[in-house]
Image (cartoon, rainbow, N blue to C red; front, top):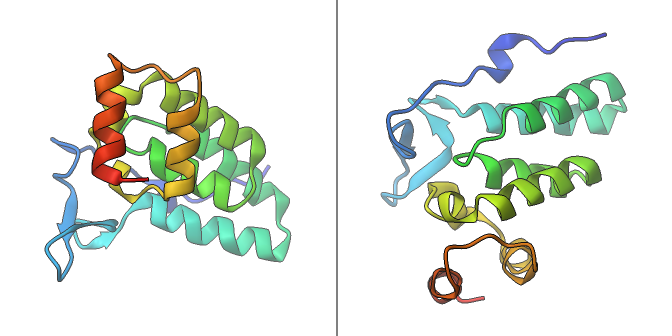
Length: 146
């Protein structure tokens, strides 16, 4: 079986959810940058896109495995978006369940602000959403205004 080089998928631990992100020119945190280097999810997205385009199914499967195995509250939204964008149904369903189960933690992560409105609506409308209370969901809806 083909294994992706560990340098492509390396994760650097961070002290806080935004500690390892650089700010872009507008002063916002850029999820594509990590200490001046591309973030591992960004690199994974590039590898997955190329493998999908070229039909290299072993690499696509390895990327799928990586997305599921390395999911955390800090990157779940990115992994969910990547899976949805590439129509990786099993991974997308797994990431959605992860987000629903840990909504309170994930809503506080910096990546939560980058989730597209249609995907956020899917999350907020799901009956399995585990939030502390209705006010928490209302707060998210009012901040994002979907």
